[in-house]
Image (cartoon, rainbow, N blue to C red; front, side):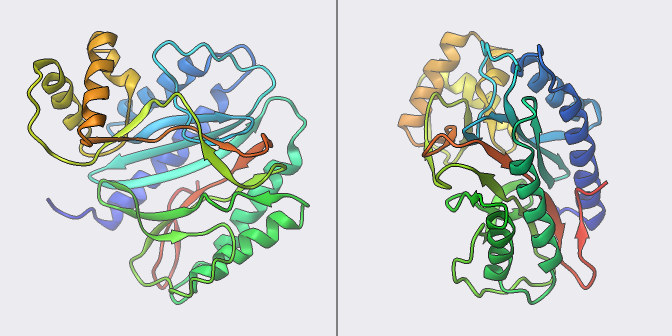
Length: 295
């Protein structure tokens, strides 16, 4: 498999940014989270790309990993909504996020996340120690008397790989590893008026294939064959139930999880139920740093 070119990374980032703006425009009072999520994923396919992961809209105290369920009943009313969108073109990934506040009550939290992303962006260059990026994020959010979420972080991006090294912390974690030429990273500050620590909740609807093993059940083999079409990228339950009966999908997912062939990524909630805002860009590190997801 050929490695993605710089042009692939630029195209993936550009389409991710355009998709994010499209998705933000759909998040309105009265719209359903399921309908908006499906439209965002369709927008990516309509532009001859594939989702790097299913679109995620995490509301209020949910910081990340909320993905619409096949029968999702959430209607947008007065939530604060973190929209996280990823696009994959020839293996290259653009990953970005923004926050929409339908209540009008949480402007300060959104500004804190945006200021943190801006401060972190200013630090990105060859030779920057990773903890300096984390410190810039922490200081920007703390200046608003809010907390970063310390056990969520940014990450490297690789070919068909959404989460790879290096990890980009949202605080100074003491890691003096330096950014190097050719690093491709996603920086994603989360600001909250809560604890700044998240925990795993349920129910889950995001999965990723982790191992290859023989499977005996015909039902599970059929679903696994469908999963393999996602090229190792994260997928969601509702993508499978659009083609297969929900009962068969749920049976297969449970068996595949028990066999440790797939891994779940459940919703992540602030420990004190604080409201959360997120901002994110993808970067290509070179002599001239490129913000891939900046329009």
